[in-house]
Length: 397
Image (cartoon, rainbow, N blue to C red; front, side, top):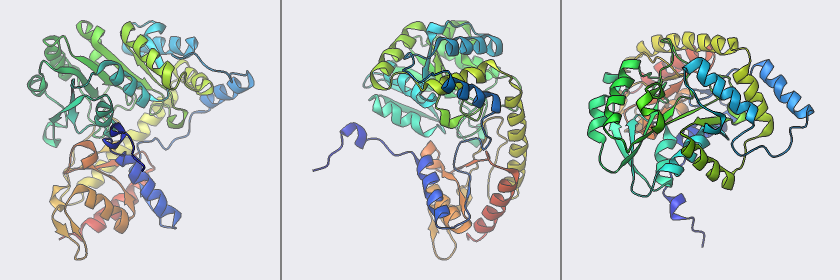
């Protein structure tokens, strides 16, 4: 009898990866699918970073790396945090992992005990909820909607706090909404957190460089919270290095040591070659980051304009990342005469099968009346995808 553990049985598969797989299957059958489901820059990794990886191979960086990462990479991360964010960390407070995803999971598993509550503003990134389940914590979901630009207020955070609250996970710029918290909005949240000294924060800043409103803001800038904040970041989004799998935490020393201990038992150090590439990314010329950011901003402007031309979609103007998160309840309960659309999952599947555009249903992000569209693709693809969506949505009556 095949019986997986209760721990695994409780986990849901990643709907973003599932939708991407479905669109790839249609492509393999010869269907011209435009994929707006995947959160991945369509740019190639910049040349100077690839050259550093090639040199690492030639220099025989082919052995086990230290569990928390090579010292030169951790020093480069500390320099980045100092120069770009005004934050002082030592290399001992940095743990490099196999992507920011592992960095988040390491931190949750290091902090959360069974029954501990974890506050998650919704819409949330799909894996947060599942990682908390893995740690046997309890997700406390704070609903936010398009009316408040998908941002949790201080009053909402205060209302979610209980003596069991252990952790808040905050993502800015946000996946899936593209919302960016301002300095004042974070300051208001910080005031609440000051009143609840038992609560730690994972500040997921992986989209830091894809920001259309000026300087990045982090909860770690407030000194009174510094010993309770774990910054998570990496190279995937800002440097177009998703496949290199390098993320990191910057954390209080005892949390860094805990994550190091955990990682030492289940993956050890990240790829030696990828680490050398990441060191070059952080320490090298940053103009490539700005070039990609400008391209994403042009695409943001285009997708928002085209989405506003589709009747029934409610759209905001996301200030970062590369996602649009339109409200689609207008189309739920409708039919094209052959199939009935009851949920955003039904709608996403309808758009994929009839319009050949892959999106992700909002259910996966704790927002059942929404769809996530990634505009990390060419302007030509965006224009054609939105034309197809407008066409197939018009058939729903």
